[in-house]
Amino acid sequence: MANKGNKVTPYVHPPNLNIGILIFAAIFIYVIVCVVMYFRTDHIVGYNVMEGSLTSNSIFKGIALRTEEVVTATDAGYVNYFAREGERVAKGDLVYTVDETGKLSDYMHTSESGENSLSDADLTELKTEIAAFTNRFDRTQFSDVYNFKYSVEGTALKLSNYNILENADALNEAGGSSFVNYRYAPRSGIVIYSIDGYENLTLEDMTAELFEQKDYEKQHLVNNELVASGDQIYKLSTSEDWSVVIQVDEDLAEQLLEKEYVEVRFLKNQYTSWGQVASYTNEAGDTFVSLTFTNSMITFCTDRFIDIELLLEDEKGLKIPNSAMVTKEFFIVPKEYVTKGGNSGSDGVLLETYDEEGNVVSQFVPTTIYDATETEYYLDDSVLRAGNNILKPESRDQKYTVSKTGSLTGVYNINKGYADFKQVTVLYANDEYSIVKSNTVYGLNVYDHIVLDASTVDDNQFIYER
Image: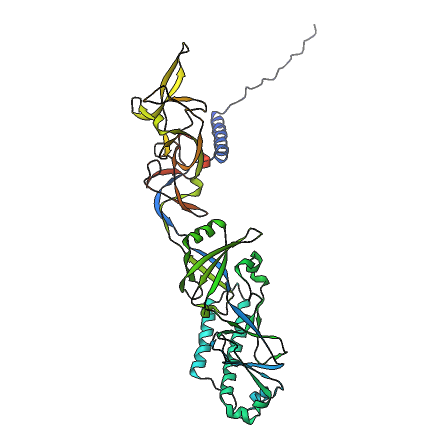
């Protein structure tokens, strides 16, 4: 009898499920889902309304416009200036001399008098110029160093020349009267020894490119240089009336024009003055404002670009972020169609509807008033629809068809735990904040809680702040 082989079947163990691992995996997946939802959801952040103000003071770089007359040389030779830059000269005062042969220059270097000594007043003038430059120096405008260099060199040479001119006897011994031509001021004004091509600009000539200082060039008229007949030799500012032109947007231009006169602070020396306002918009659409002054021209006579600050009034009220602002549409209905009713005596309208049998009936529908004019109310559009008829409470035969709409600017108040629109009246705004009227009937009050970003909520949405 043959033996049958035994068949062995391996035993398969059932999977050993660890309850701890399952719980950990579930928690891990839940955390991942929550993190993803957190970053994909707009978060609602509140903002406490407080009283505040926004200063509308603004700093601008302006271009100085003066009545300037460029004087040209009538002789060829070496020019020597004797009127000091920034000094007022009368008609007929000596401004410069022209040395046709160069002998005066030789005399200045070989004179037995040696170096020309400067008076205490002359030294004080140089020290003042150096101190002024040190105080206003801006490392980002290093080109100003070269302008300062030319200015100091010119001042020192003019002071030296003035001392030599006072020694008339020495000049006579050198034969100065035979080769030196004396040139006098054709009219009274402030003497300036630089030319920049902006001398004849007016408000109507303004373009945005003129304010780009990288392309600006000032030619300094240097003492003891050789000039030809007809060369530009110096210029005179002949009127104390002068202007500073700034580039602004249209809104600010209108605001300044309404004021007519604006107080200005000059950042160079912190002086203030009142300027008369004029405006011009060129063909490119750029708007410029001119501020005209009747004093202080001599202080800035050598400056073409001047930094100024407009000292405008501060607006005070409730300060709110611009991100909280939103614009909504509302139905506008006559005031006589709004009444009070319901158990709470709330505002509302009598809406014309139909009962089950098709009969026309009126139903009181509460609605929120968001703003009012003398004759009309702005009502919420969540319960009314365009084309609805509302009845006049005193005479229900008179109907008004809801159709007229208007927009209001406001914020979402969340004092009650949901997004409640409140209309605001903006007094002044900058890029980040607005100042709105406080304690208005349908608006905000101090310490109200509003949504910081209006785009993160919808009307009447319940609020769960982060």
